[in-house]
Image 1: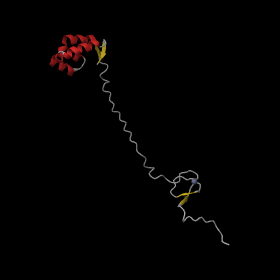
Image 2: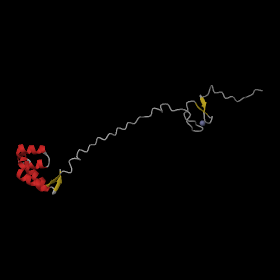
Image 3: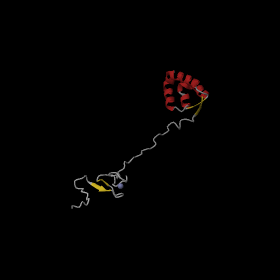
Image 4: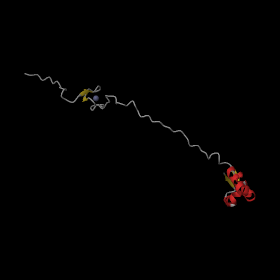
Length: 130
Ligand SMILES: [Zn+2]
């Protein structure tokens, strides 16, 4: 009578291991136990988590913040434009020094800029901001 001791021969089978939690026979490469669902192996490369570099430097400089709040009166600018527009007085009044100098040397852009500015200022509200 031959005794069958029930020794499981693992040599010819797929390489297996036993879950360290529940003891179930699982594939050697298994990371998660198929029986109890626990993680039996460390995930390779799990330590090297993707480094998310949040480069959230605020470069949005509000360059216009200093410009508003400079209150100008329409009638002052209009009178300056009418009487001294050819030297760019209204441009200097609005703080546009560059344009003022340009008007000064070109006689208000040969009168064209002077005329346009007169219309523009005329259409402005009584108090405007530059
Ligand atoms: Zn298990």
